[in-house]
Length: 181
Image 1: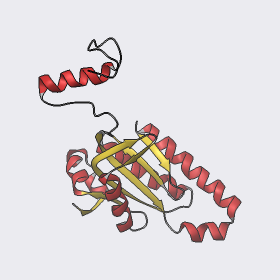
Image 2: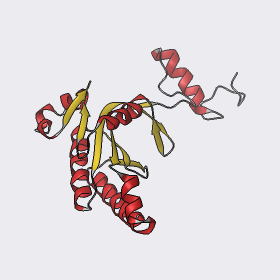
Image 3: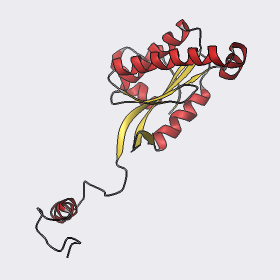
């Protein structure tokens, strides 16, 4: 017996009943109540190089204005590539893409935009499963992207081998570095 007291799908917890029927018929359940469903995405992490030194040299107000310009440019670039800016991290951004070539193009455009603002950034790209968590993301792909960023040199776009394999025919491989599988 279901908590609503019946077995008619139009009363009570219809989703639970329909999920049970689906599992009985197909042998699996598509909807996991309360659990995050993984999504395949390309994660882009950026990091502003020498942030603390630059902020100290410029002062809080001037740095805040420059950081706001950076964040606005990042938002526009990510939107132009039809993707999702998850958040500004204070020293870069975190974004997700449904197509790795869009992620690569965004990373390259972000590097150029940062140069125009007098900033240097490092960017990393990693494709894998992420977990959607309200307005944020999590999962191993996010952690891996952060580790790739830590290996980047200033002005470098560093991608996992999976990303470069996925964009092999797009003419982008010569524009990115690969050091991680």
